[in-house]
Amino acid sequence: MAPPPATATATAAAAAAVRPHVLLRRGGGLLPSPPCPATLPFASRGAAARRLRLPPPRFSLSTVPKSLSAASHVPVRSLFTGIVEEVGRVRRLGPPLAPSGGGGGGGEAPGLDLEVETKSLLAGTQLGDSVAVDGTCLTVAAIDPAASTLTFGVAPETLRRTSLGERAPGDGVNLERALTPSSRMGGHFVQGHVDGTGEIAAFRPDGDSLWVTVRAPPEILRLLVPKGFVAVDGTSLTVVSVDDQGGWFDFMLVRYTQDNIVLPTKKVGDKVNLEADILGKYVEKLLAGRLEAMVKADS
Image 1 (cartoon, rainbow, N blue to C red):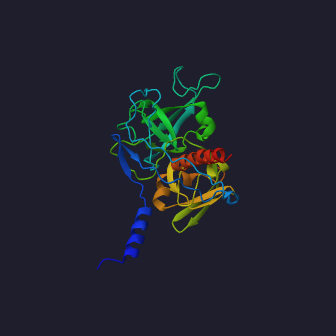
Image 2 (image 1 turned 90 degrees about the vertical axis):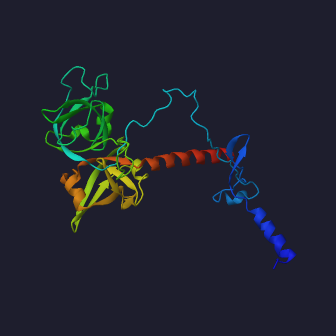
Image 3 (image 1 turned 120 degrees about the vertical axis):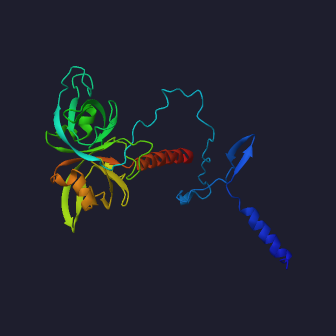
C-alpha cells in the first residue's frame, strides 16, 4: 500500500537532504563532489554569527607529473620492522683505518668506524646495504668474511644524536637488515632515524616478563601513546603507559624478546636510542598546519 502523500513528501525531502560524498566524473577526470562547508565543533562559541569556514581539502588522482625531476623526488631508501635479527658484538669503534674510510662528516670532526661481529648477517649482505645497529640506520662500508665482521661509517651527527659513541669492544648491539619486497612486516615501520636518547629508569620483573621504564625528553614523549609503537634500540615495542609530567614511559618484554635483544643486559642509567612512530610525526605536522590555517582564516 502506498504511503500517504504527506509521508511520501517527507521521505523525499529527507532523502534529498542526505548528500553522500561521492566521486563524480567531470571533464574526463574524477573529482570529489563539493561538500557543504563544515563548521568546526571547537570554534569559538562567542562567534556564532561569524562561524569559521575552511576550504575543502584538495585531492589529486593524477599520476606524478613528468616534469618532476629525480632530484626532487626522494624515495624511502630503507625501512625496518624493529624485529631484531641478531645481537652482534662490537669489535672496534674508532677512527677510520684508511684516510678514505666511511662515516666522515668532514671538517674537524671526522666520523668513526664501527666494526661489528655477526654470525648470520654476512650472507646476502653487500657493500652499501643498510643495517639498523641499535636502531640506527647505517651503511655497510666494509665486509670481512674471514673475521665475520661488518664495518659501518658513523657520522658526527649520528654520534651526537644516538648512543653509539658510548659502545665499547665486546658490547652487544641489535642488528636488523633493511626490508625486502618479500619480507614479512612483523613489527612496525622503523626508519632507523633516531629521534634522541632516553635513559633506563627501572627494571621490574613480572613473572617471566620484564617491565622497563625509560625517561625520555618531552619532544619524544609527546609522540608516544599507550598501545602505540616505539623503537627502543631498534626493537619494536608496544607502549603501555606514558607520563608526560613525570617524563617517562614504560613497556613490557616477554621472555622470548628478553633472550634476543640487548636491552635486558643493560643497567639502570644506561642510554637507549629512541625512535617514535613515524605516523605520529606526520599527524603532528598536519595538525599544526591545519591549526595555523584556522588561525589565519579566523583573523
